Image 1 (spheres, rainbow, N blue to C red):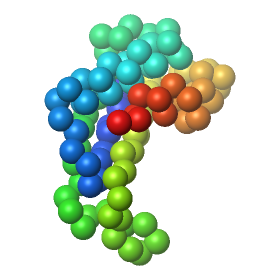
Image 2: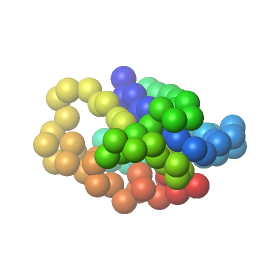
Image 3: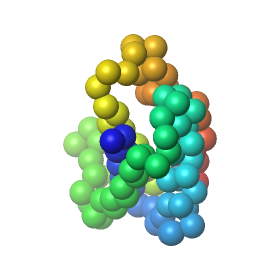
Length: 94
């Protein structure tokens, strides 16, 4: 089952934003893999204040991260589309 985790720091994602992001991730996954959207899971996690560091320093600006896991057996061509998919970047613009 494809599972995507959206982690955020220093930003509030209300239910409307979460729904929009989840729908967008589901649509992109379906488009890239051809898989049924029913199986796409999207989990949201919020980092606690002062629990996000870059270069050894606390991150103060707004950050949203997307981590996706898909099943084995996908072709290299399909897997290659995921990390740099412009469509995912558009989904996460808040």
